Image (cartoon, rainbow, N blue to C red):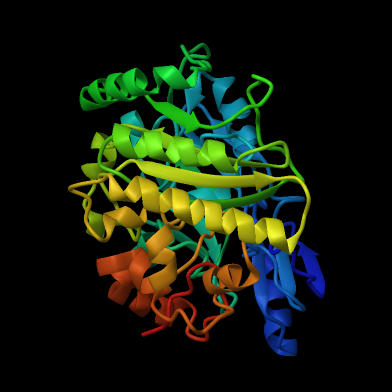
Length: 408
């Protein structure tokens, strides 16, 4: 319910020139701007109340593979499904979302973890160049050799600097068949599972990855998210699996779950060695050597009471899990910026990736002034440099729907 924004105008753009015209029109008539790529942003950042939405998804949604050069050109409104399906025809793949209905734009601009990250790094580490329409209507190529400051900024800085109409991504050899699947364990196996996971994680290779979910299924079936559900998500991070806190979290999740509401904790175990070899100052993204955790409250009926319940449950689960962690710094515990975090939310920002209370979504999208340092916290040491880049490409801060950076 809080992700909904009633825009005044939606511009279904067909190319970069259309985007330029849409930006100019919005500036001329004083309309706020939001950018919709794949639409995987239920915090509301891809729409704007009473404003103009630049929607890339209808026409700029293709993936075109150059197998010889091992690159793929991807429209700014494409989903990862389009990239995965087209690339694998040639025995190739790139680092994309862990689910294929994620939008390419939001994931790449926000950093981008995926199943292939252990071998090939983040999505931004595989970005060769991008076409960006900036606030003054310029249509620019951003790469290591052209506008390198802009290229730095879009690799982790989100939509703060313009509208990306095309991404060019590196492709890597990938066989079509992989060893993967679901395993469902009963509660008595939890301690042994955590022990085994800890041992595996210490020596996990670059072709391995795993996700684990603490959840309750009343009928024994494996449940999935689907469109139309109410979902509250919040992120944090941890150094390694810790059975006492995981066990306590599972007990709490069981106690609050039922037919109409379910609590789930998702642990992402994507070996981070390759990602950590890239210096933090090379891209805007804050690189932490800590696996991500995503806490979810899921419900059916769209009510404010359920939203409040989801928030309360998610924060309590986050608190329980965080208490069991040692060796995680005050920055690292905040987790992946595309997820948001618990204590981080209260100090600086709020969850970006999910449906939540209205005030939370406003803090992410820059609609609330009471959390002025949210972008500082997200970008850490890179923030001053990003402020200078913001001043050059968007001095009036018209692109302000995802952890908005204040121009220097």
